[in-house]
Length: 436
Image (cartoon, rainbow, N blue to C red; front, side, top):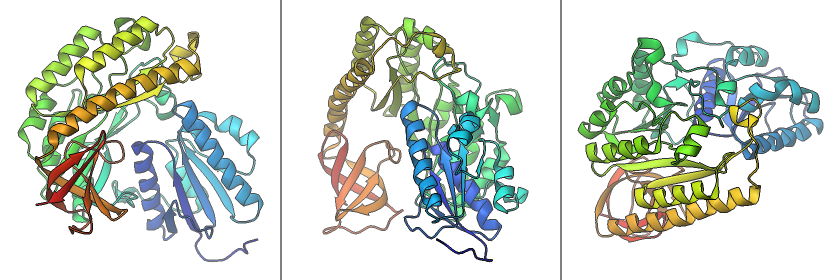
């Protein structure tokens, strides 16, 4: 059993879930460091006095992963290997009353908006003057930039508003200052994220300000790449496309989850858009920004999705040919609108439909990648793995998209540097090349 010490405790922060949670953990760690705590992120050592788990509660699989992680560290606490165990994030926000009864080893549970309370409990002071400064957990050359918190959309399947509250935009000035600090510390690429990035500014300025924000950020010297994630298709602000098209340091990339395509399912999902408008929007996007890589997310198995709905979706995806695509199966989440509907589609059918979408997308991705063989691409290198330098083009975001592999035996680059790479081969999701 670890003996107690009078020195400042060592804290290990564990992050689960999405990039928004990553930013929350980085802000938490920045605050702890400012209070002179020794802090690590997902350390594999067992020498921490305090564990803070930042949980995800979006879908069933994510919730189970969070619970399993909490139980893992609860057992370590029972063995005397740590002094305090705290839990924060979406799962904690939504279920802390129930979980506190089931897992008494946890010393305290905190919601998504309770950072000052968490810091006070740990013994740290909340530093209002940090202004978004944080301790990056990503490689320093890229960072996620959370431009807003919460969501005002009424999507039937989504519990995010229950866990994160309504949409709250950050000011343009605060985001400018944060990006300037990131660039000063070596960041070359920022990913703009929010639950709904296209809603940005409506609450704070009375109108959508995403295009202006992107212009202001792209003017910051030293910022080489910026890319936009999580754009909502309904009422999409078209002036954003003009900014993407005209600015060289804004990647020709857009992450816009459409979730489905049939009018029947879109209405049931409460997405506020029709199939016809979705198709028109995608056409307008590709017309205004030729060569743009469009990433989307699909949700299959929503209550009421018929086999005909699915076949129509599959056909539409084959015709639209998104450059990047991910798929989730529906999770029946209590207190959401869809929870009032019968979850009549079996898990096996949901998984089978998701697999069919990804099988089709694999062939689409293969076609896109084969066209890149012989071309030269600007690549930002992220890591060294298996005797290869691994990087990305402007059409690819970290962790979710394609990668470029270059032999470390015949080439040399520094992590976080750009190089021109000639693509010599391609698989379904990866490219191979040599540095020019």
